[in-house]
Each structure stands twice: as structure tokens, then as C-alpha cells.
Image (cartoon, rainbow, N blue to C red; front, top):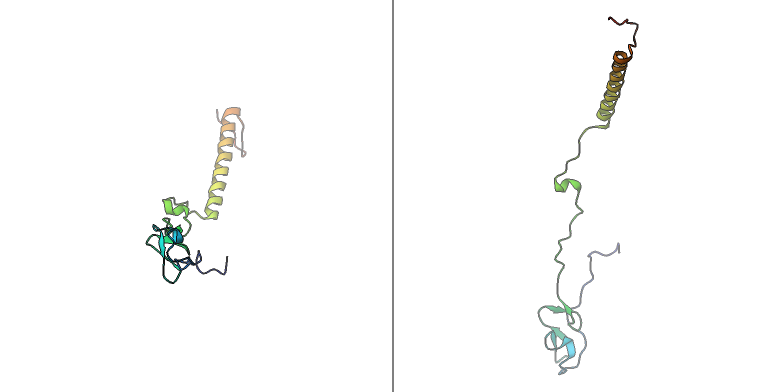
Length: 117
């Protein structure tokens, strides 16, 4: 939620109610013990009010989203105007090549010049 300041809410470690002397209270003798004050006290590695959850952590170090440049790809740095000019030169070159080829193959005379034989 937007009003949260941290990703997860605080997890209570122990202090859940129990009856002193019960062996299955607080997750059993392996997870925690019930104190004289009738509240759970968790052992190392366990958490939660009744010491039932493993006290783990997220092994993934979450950070900012990766960008394509993070993997070494660097896109072309050409400006749009350079690309437009290059495309124009390419198109004019194709047109000239077509006209020159047509003149040679068909005997077409262009631009007011006559063909020498």
C-alpha cells in the first residue's frame, strides 16, 4: 500500500499467550518455551507470537529494475535527423542506380544527352 514505509509489517517475536509448563506450547520444546509470565519466548531461528514460523530472510537482494544497458548492450546513438538524411541518400542512390541501369540496358537517353555508340 502507498502509505506503508517498509515492505513488510513487523513480525511479533514470541510474547503470545500460553500456559506455563505445557510442552507443546510455543511450538514445542524445539521452537520456544513458555515463561513463568505465561508468554512465549522463542528460541533462535523461530519467530511469531507462538514461535511457529521460521525466522528467515529473503535471499534476493531487491534493487532497481535492470536496464538493457546493464547487460552491455549499447543502442545506436544516432540522432533522428541523421537517420532521415541517411535514408534520403539511400533512396536517391537507388533511384540513380535504377536510372543508370535502365539507360544501359534499354538504350534510354536521359537528361537531353544522346548516347554514343
